[in-house]
Structure formats: structure tokens, C-alpha cells
Image (cartoon, rainbow, N blue to C red; front, side, top):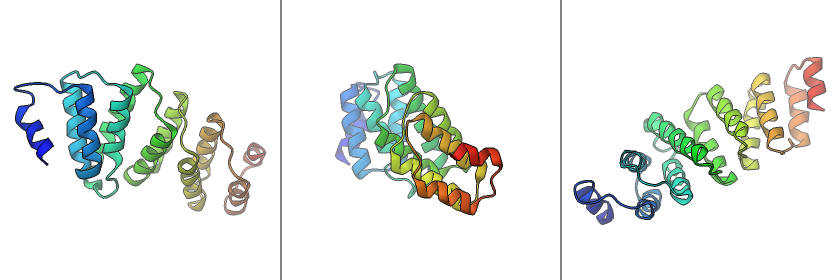
Length: 189
């Protein structure tokens, strides 16, 4: 609390913190504060044109998603912030770690309609980014349980583009629980 007290007291009237200082603040935010405070810090970083190091970007993602879904009332701010950070990563050629991107996927599954989640996965894979295997499997399994054929195939495509294979039980479950066309059955092979 003292750290954030001094931050709000001195910024921006006296000084603008460095990338390293913001990284430290965001680490503290992930542990002791809230997602919306992490969002506020990111807005300051963007507003003050602070240089965004790969570590700062990754720490921002961690801080923003660390309290989801507890703070789902701020979901639009959280989603907007994550998209902003990922956009900056793409611009700077920074590849988010698989595990972090998997964390973002889990957060988005709590906050967004499914079609938006699948579109997010598809976009990220299009950038050449990969998700952690457990997160992408979780999304696929949820779609299979819902009987959602079209989105299940989109997730499978995203997995294939990430050089990840669905497990045999996923394919078996799809055949069992979904009404598939002949072409879709061929695609599963």
C-alpha cells in the first residue's frame, strides 16, 4: 500500500517511473492489489509513453489476469487492457510465453462469449503464437460437451497450426456426442 501511495503522490507531477519501476509495481499488483489497478497502471504506461520491455509486457498480462474471474465486474476493462498489451507485443515482435497466453485464454473463457474466445485463439495462432496445451484442450473439451461442432473444429484448427495434436479421447468424444458430416469425419482423421 505504501508503494502505491507514493506512486499516486509523485506521478506524474514529479517524475515518470521507468519500465523497471513499473514492472515492480505490477508484480506487487499481481500479488496484493486488483486487476483494475493493474489496468490503471497499464493506462499510465501507455499515456506516459514508457518504454515497454518484454518483461514489463509479460508482467502486465500476469497482473491483469491474476484476479479473474473474481473481478469479472471489470471484465470490459480487463479484456481491453489484455488486447492492448498483446497488440503492443505484436508490434514489438515480442512472443508471449505459451503458459501466459494459456492464462489469458482461461481468463477470457470466464469473461467473453465463446465466439469471441475462439476468434481470439484464431488471431493469436495467426500471429504465430502458441497456447499452453492444457488451456487449449480445456477450450476444446468445453465445446465438445456443449455439442458445438463448428467452434470445436476452429479450436482443432488452431491446435494444428500450433503443432499440437488433439488426444484420441477428444476425437472419440466428438464422434460420439456430435452429429458430424462426412467431410468433418474425414477432417478428424
